[in-house]
Length: 77
Image 1 (cartoon, rainbow, N blue to C red):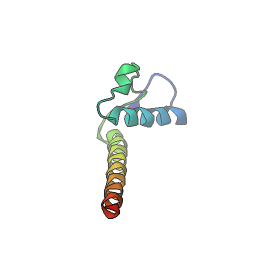
Image 2: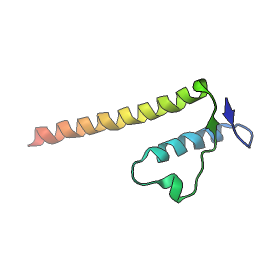
Image 3: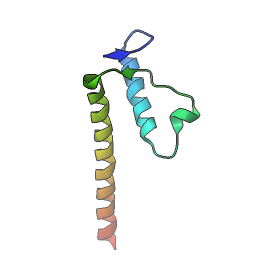
């Protein structure tokens, strides 16, 4: 399901999702600047589903926070 050079450990998956998060930040290119490559490479559809779900969860969280902030800002005015 995943290809990796080192044994799979919990820390490897943690680093992968941390890499996904930093890779999602628009305009900053943190992973390119630090020359940080993904610790795992998903192979196949089943292995890619958790990564897509993680990205959707993060995007949903950011959008709901922006919505809440916008509502609070509109109520103050």
